[in-house]
Length: 387
Picture 1 (cartoon, rainbow, N blue to C red):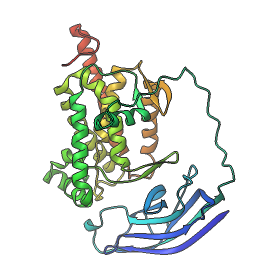
Picture 2 (picture 1 turned 90 degrees about the vertical axis):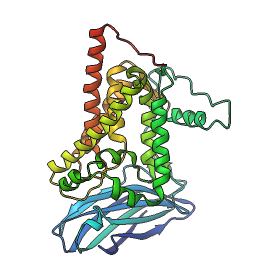
Picture 3 (picture 1 turned 60 degrees about the vertical axis):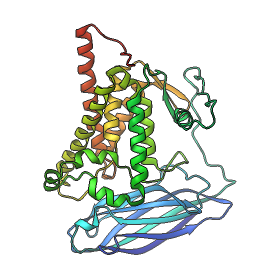
Picture 4 (picture 1 turned 120 degrees about the vertical axis):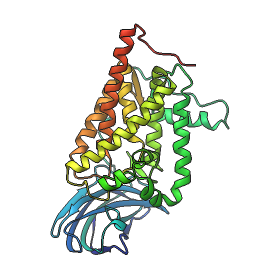
């Protein structure tokens, strides 16, 4: 059963964001999908405006992003988007989050009137939702990680939880203290900035505007330590604090072995260099697509972590990873991830710094290849053990 909503929403410099309540389904119903169309019918003060409309689903007071429309709109332009998979059955409410996609404090006076049309596909819980059959396992399943013996050892329980989602089979040959230090630093900074994240993004986030980049060069370093609080749904699984959670997961899985291969000091230096170069790569991409003067803030450690993943690919091409219980070659996993980033690069959604991911990954591959050749020339190939 399709339920429909259509209405006008106005945003301006004084009220750049709006929440629009759409509907709430019954206890014996669930949201199977949805579609969203956004049309700019009026705009004052600007020739075009980046507009972001998020279709959100909620349970009690918890809301999660489902899908969105993001575009640089001109008057009369319309864009549509729809969900690619069913929503988790615990979510019973639907709302829209409408916002200016840029930083409103950087723009002069403006006002935009949007015509929004959305459809929600609602079914009864008893109705089965077709799902593709699971493919047979290609190889015998690997043993699941064992829960820690000490129930109050927080670090051990964190490691156990992350390895249940994604892990590699190459155990680190050293304590990987720098990787642990980076994870702790990101977590502490996140806890300190989460309450007023918009202020910290404005002060420390990376901007493509040349005058700001030259006048405040520290932003190219500080941007990688900030993470935005957001909730995402992955295959029906609600992931709170998804921005930092996924970055910590990928750094934890791929960083420890790279650290042991390079050594603590060189690993930390490469991590910081990769973060800086990845940020500059995103800035260059925004200039190439005509957004070099737009007040778009770039934050997050994913560019540096993508570089670490590129180095892992060179150092451990024959290793395997276990992703959600399925064993696959690390080469295949990382190659598919990289191709997915390249595909996203040419989409109209610029809310994810995909160019930073690609830049960091490619530079990581180049640096690791140079390191590997140097090891071969010196006759010291193999894994370096650092105490």
